[in-house]
Length: 509
Image 1 (cartoon, rainbow, N blue to C red):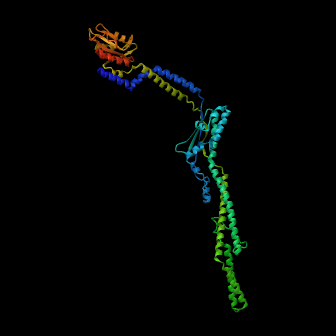
Image 2: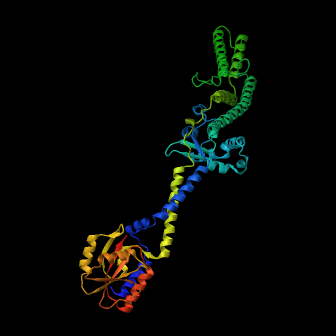
């Protein structure tokens, strides 16, 4: 690789932010102290913080919103008995989501809110009451939601005071059950008022129709002695009704009289002459009866219509009175509230603060801060820690990676290195290092490699004054000791002096 190519590789490295897994692992190993300090301080802070937070307790209960029942008529089976006379007074339920929003509204929950504030006053939390609004109280204390694909409503309440939870949940349960029967009771009450009004109006209409029939019957001598038609049976299961019973009886008796007179006339005609007084008297009587039977058709039709109207009015009045009785019976029945699946219960384990979660969260924050701090320090130092990065930017061949453990090198590795790289006699070898000042590791290596047959010297990467052209030169790079400016400077110096570099060694700590 030429010097110009190595410069390009160096620029590419400086603009490349990609890291391998090994680089990341080495980063954590290298900065374990900083990461540990930041994480420990964050954990310690989170422990004190979690201990300072007041504990929060939670209670809950479940209730069934019976949509099927509430969405139908509030009268149940009465609807069929009313025969369509009642108007549509049913207060139909909105969607279940709307019901939940109503349950969250001040219409239902305001008494609970006032009770909660009273409990705070008893617990000397007056300042807290001043800042507490209904919406904030509802949002921060309650969790109201439906179980998926059901009508089961889950209600949870949170409070810092453990003793407040059950009383508040009991009151919420009472308010919800009051609300559940409110629509039904309102519908029945409106229906009773409507039926009573209809009964009053129908009584007046029935009285008028009966009086009109009575007056017409008396005036035309069509009814019984009191001018009234017989009592009407309004039940559907009774015998069929007759609208002109009195008039029929009257005409039947007249026909009997007429038949008797005509029979008497025939009998006397055998003994008397036509112009005799008995015959003439009988004929007058017969004519008189016949005249009484010849009533105008309009009178009979009007009598029939008045009778029919009286029957309709009396039947409707009886039906309304029966419906009013049934509604009053229904009103006396106990209104069935929504069903509680579970009674209000208190969780024995506090839900907040979740100390473990707080500690874990702040430990993560501490670790992140430690990583950021370490990255800033590494960036300021500009040290290249990755061997793979060094291989990509140094324009010479990596000859050997050496392990330096417990202040010494591996003997077998040094033997191989001596035989392969430092075996020429009467030749000077130069190890160019990037260490400033004394370097114990480099000095130890030179001491191990030196013998009677070779001459190994140490030189700085930026000082080539002692190097001769016939010398064999190697770079010696220790892990975590090379900075980006040093690599740049080395490449420039090699280009200027034409010093030959035979390769480089990498020492792993």
